Each structure stands twice: as structure tokens, then as C-alpha cells.
Length: 112
Image (cartoon, rainbow, N blue to C red; front, side, top):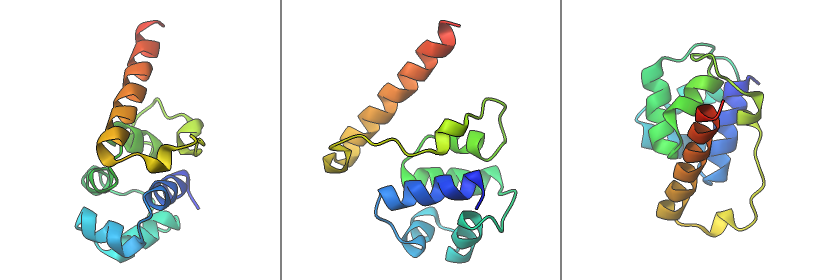
């Protein structure tokens, strides 16, 4: 399994989505999701990654980093962090958490 495949799998499972459901939400085939997650599809297009990031509600820049399209890829981006209680948050609250994480990242880059 590739970093990208592991990342997509972790994000999909965190949202309790099947491969078919993610495919439906992303408007791509479930076979494409399967191939990505299993590392059979090596270089997905940015359009495919954008569809997946939208369907999963994740940051597009992050999935592009994981896929190797940008230089600031961090292996920690593919490891799942345990945040107790996060599973109880609704989509709006999760978006606030994502926004805060993006803010922290930008603050870190600014302070370098």
C-alpha cells in the first residue's frame, strides 16, 4: 500500500464510508478508489484527488502533498492522530477543527 492509499483509506474509514460510497460522493468509479487505496494506481490526476478531497471533506493541499505533487510532504500527514471525542463532532465542527489546523500550519510557516 502506498502513502496515498493508506491516507485515503484512513480518511475514508474515519468517516465510516465504504469504497463505493466514497466513489459515489466523489463521482468516480469504485474501481478507481480500490486501485488508489491498494497502490495499483500510482499517479492519479489532481482532478481525481480534488474530487476525493471534496468527498471526504479534507484539505486538497494535504492530499496533493501525500500524493507527491508538492514538495512539503510530511510523512506524519498519513498517520492517524487519536483525538478523543472527535467522532462525536458534526461536519461543521470538524470543518472548524480543520480550519484551526490550517491556521496552525500557516502560523508555523510564517514563524520560520
